[in-house]
Image (cartoon, rainbow, N blue to C red; front, side):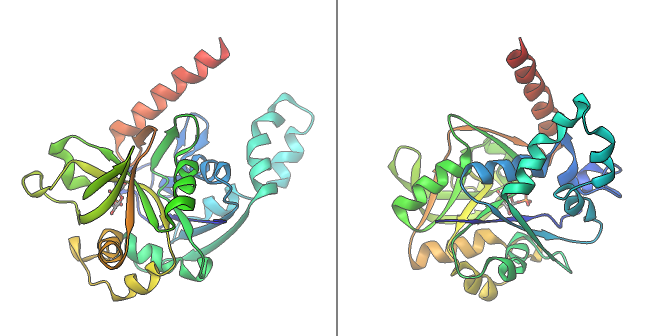
Length: 276
Ligand code: G1P
């Protein structure tokens, strides 16, 4: 059983300045819910209840969010506003949260390695909260957990992107062995469109086997001089097997203003339709 889910959440969120000057980007709301809560709910739905969050300076609001706020809850007790906290209450009662700090920013691979102390020696999920995923039928992590039980190796989510935008993603090449399932042959971090082998891009959902930590320790700085999880997964794929999974659902790139506005608009419309 996979129980732990890692949330790398130390990044600065410079694309959202000035909003993220004093507030973590993971706390930006889509409708009235912060991005990281969507990720935690997706993990919970997949049966993962031990949340491990890699934070950094200026991220205290995340810890406060997944905690009780006595004064506020006392104030709204018995009013119709109480309902607004029901979901987060349920999360706090069901999950545990542990935190560690990333002292220096040195890439996603480095952030994941920083989380080792919270994860230990079991397979675990990874959610990048700024990729907001709405699964079709079931959540994206649930779909991936089911696949993990079949293949027992590291798995990550992919989708087809605009071939002109390959330099924003890890890009893979693989053998399509089943509906949406690829065995990874090679992968490269953020290639220019002319160097990209395909337009199959890595999305911020991973299930990793714990040997990834030893591989990350040995992984040399790659793109932008940072330790890349893409490079570590490439090593894992060469030494054994890694699966890329074209998930059922929609993903919004809430790390960009355009994707963030799209998520907000579409989820607002869905909320209104559900009310009608
Ligand atoms: C990271 C990964 C990249 C992946 C992307 C998904 O990049 O390094 O391989 O495609 O997440 O969102 P970042 O968006 O942190 O630059």
